[in-house]
Image 1 (tube, rainbow, N blue to C red):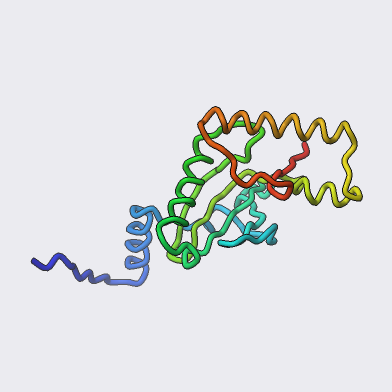
Image 2: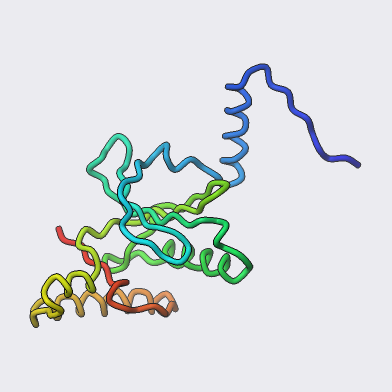
Amino acid sequence: PNKSRILYFDSRDKQKQWTEMLLKAMGFSNLFDFYELGKTLGKGQYGQVHLAYQKGDPSKVFAVKVIDRKRIRGQKPHDLLVNEIEIMTEIKDKNVVGLVTATKTMSNYYLVMEFCNGGDVDGFMKARGGWLSETEARLILRQLVAGLLAIRDEQVMHRDLKLPNILMNFP
C-alpha cells in the first residue's frame, strides 16, 4: 500500500509552522532562535568553532562547533560524532569543557559548548616566548590531571591530548 500523504495548506505561514513542528519532532531545531554566532575561533577537519552569544542575554557566551554534515561520510565518522556527544553529555566536571546542547539542521550539526575565554595552552605558551613559569605549569597540570581523572572515571580515554586541545578559562 502507498503510505505517502499529500498535505495542502491554506497559507505559507501554516505550511512553515507545520514544517518546523515536524523538523523539531525529528530532532531538528533552529539554533539561531537561541544563539547569535560570532567570529570563528578555530577550524578543524569537519567544520569550525564559532563564538556565540545567547539571544536576550549577550553576557552568556558559548563556543559552537559547526560540523558540515557532508563531511561526515561513512559510518565511522558518524559514530565518532555520536560518541563525542555522548561523552560530553555524561561528563560533568569543572575541568572538562561541558556540552550545553547539540542540534542539527539539514546541512550541519551544532554542538553548543562552554566557552573558555583563555584560548589554548599552545597559544598561551607562544605568547610567552614558548615558556611557562613553574607556577603557571603547576596550575595547568593540576587542572589537566583533574580533568583526565574525571574522564577516566567515566571509562573514557582522551586520544588527542595536545597543547592546542587544552583550553583555558579565566574568571
